[in-house]
Image (cartoon, rainbow, N blue to C red; front, top):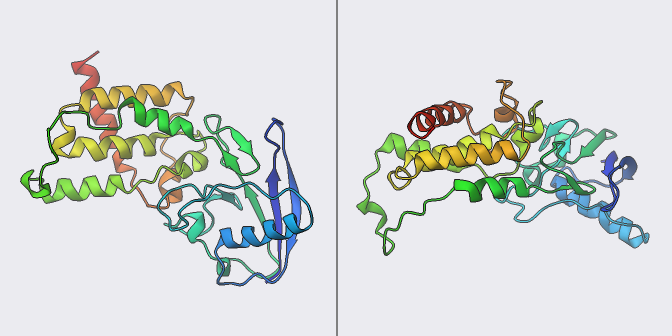
Length: 248
């Protein structure tokens, strides 16, 4: 396959960037998208040029690092996969592919395709944990959890914090991410004690980071590589309302 890539390049000390064009030959349909970028970077380094900076780690769809906007779609054209799981067979020979970083005020570009997602870390630090002292680690089966609650918690816990929901949302809202983290812990017995403080603190932290509001476009659910459902936003709003009444 022969492809034309239009890739966003932005220097670390420059607030402005631009698209640069690259022609890539001999791309195997069985390559992953990141492997294709690896080959391009090898060529650029061989030519003495600056390689393209992009985030990656596990390359197994677990860590959420591979955050790329591909032809206007977060993580590319496939549903339910991260960029590292996207294969070049999804593109046609001779196609032009536009590659950009996440576009959100709360995710400033560090360099090229790499953005600063530490805003998510600060939201988690605000309350996305269980701090109740339980002594030693209990045996897993000693705490009974109803099957519906366990399944709902697992569905929410699937969130990998990649930020695709923010990138896809026209308001750059982080509601799906925060809702998944809030719902995951609020559903389990261990998270019940702190659920009121948790939702209030995490929503407050989300607002302070400059994320937009949810207006029900559902783009977040469509772009999520783990297909987190927007029902969790409803659950978070319910938790937030109850906590606000208890602790105004």
